[in-house]
Image (cartoon, rainbow, N blue to C red; front, side, top):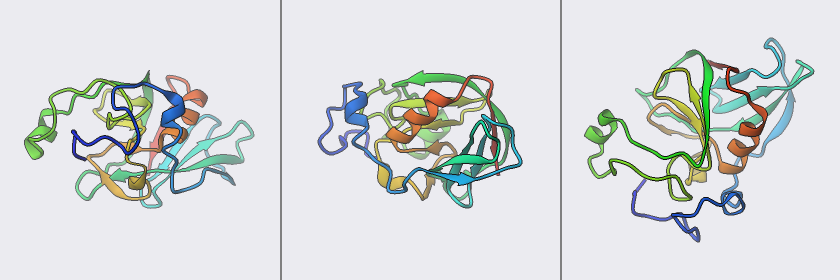
Length: 170
């Protein structure tokens, strides 16, 4: 992503949920049969490029399209949601800046921020489940290890998930 390029038609400095909702996922959110995990658990299939949020009945889940880590940046394991932020600021890790020196040292939250409208922080890692200002990246392996969702989807998930929820990355 070019840090100076604004998502088409969006004001980069604005924190506006209505504008963020315009960046729809190319993969429609659906309810599907799903079992084997406790209600409220997030299960991420990096191979499928889908995130499942297990519903209260324990037999179904909301299925969302996601973007995942590109080759060499994917990971597996179990974490918990350690924090939640609306319109998070972004400070790229020094390793990312070393790979891409054109990135800014810091970017305030807003419509042009790569973390999108919401972020769910995973344990004490650098990884997050977050929105994106590039909805065309959903369904692809493009990130540096974070899980990307279209802003309307991450806003929906954010409202459903509590700090402490379990996240399983397969």
